[in-house]
Every structure is written in C-alpha cells, then in structure tokens.
Image 1 (cartoon, rainbow, N blue to C red):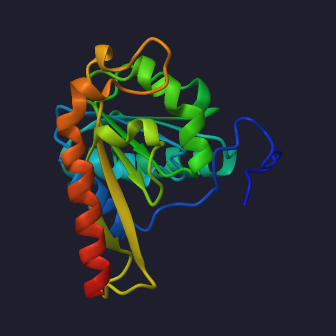
Image 2 (cartoon, rainbow, N blue to C red):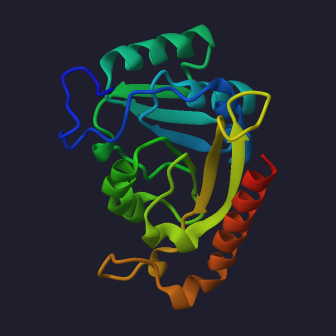
Length: 211
C-alpha cells in the first residue's frame, strides 16, 4: 500500500509501506557485520526496527527516513522505548533527498524502481567501502560487479519455498570505478568483483534446490 497522501505515480513513492519481519532484521544486521563504529542509514525505515536493532544490539548510530508519517511517529516512539534515541535519528521525508555521505552501512527494502531512482545518488554520495544490504530486490545491473555476496533467509524457523527471501550485500567501489557518463562501473578495474556475483548466483541456486 502507498503512504497516505501519495500514489504509486509520485516520484517519492519507492515501494510499499511494509516493515521487515524481526527475524529478517536480525539476519540483516548480522549479515552487514555492524559494529559500534558504524553509522547505519535506512531509506524507507518504516517503524525503525533495523536502526533500533543495530543501535541496541551493536551500539551503532543510525539515521532513517520514512515517507509515512504514522510509521515515522511509531519509529520515534519505539526508539525512545528502547532507550536508543541518542543513537538513532528518524525523520519523515523523501528518501530521494536523503544525505548518504555519513553512511558506512545502507539498508534498502525497496522495489526495483525505487532502487533505480536512488542509484545515482548512491554513486555520488556513498563513501568507498560502504556496505549496502538490500532485502528481496537487487540493485540495477550497473551495480552487479559490486555484489560481493548474497544469503537466503527465512521469516520463520522453517525454511521452504514459501518463506525464503534473499539478502544481497554490495560494497561501494572507489569513485574512479564509475565512469563520467554514469552508465556503470569500469569493468576492467573491478572485474574481480564479478567473482562474488557468480558465487552468489550459485549459492542461491543451491539453497533453492535444497528447500
């Protein structure tokens, strides 16, 4: 469902208003190997559970932006309840205007069109080495060489085809890896990263075959 007052045609509408299951959140935080040195940014943070978990369990600071006012208010309240308001800032606004420059970890649970709209901003603002974790949907093909690994996760204790989801981990390359036309990374420079993408595909194929 779209946030109140917005439709799927609005530029700032990047995906459905839906919180990730806590079991998935725990897996995402673990997968990103978050520590107290990290500053986590969550675009479309819903009730803030990713940021709150990262702050409470790992001591990380965080910034979240959420389009839906009710979800944003809930996130602020939950952060206070968990005593992490000093570590987590959550605002109601447009993710397309978010400042990503301080992020060391970026979480995205957006539709493909949302990831696409944010792509150029991520290329321009994210620091080299920043980890990007996407839930269910991958980034565009121009980010494929930056895919370092992937993981099959389940929202319940039983993993089968009905509840398997995917996490994708990307590592932001040096600025020089992106060409001036913005059409994608220079393959001759980051070709070794393709190995990660291939390994990811094999891993997902194998996990689905065992389900």
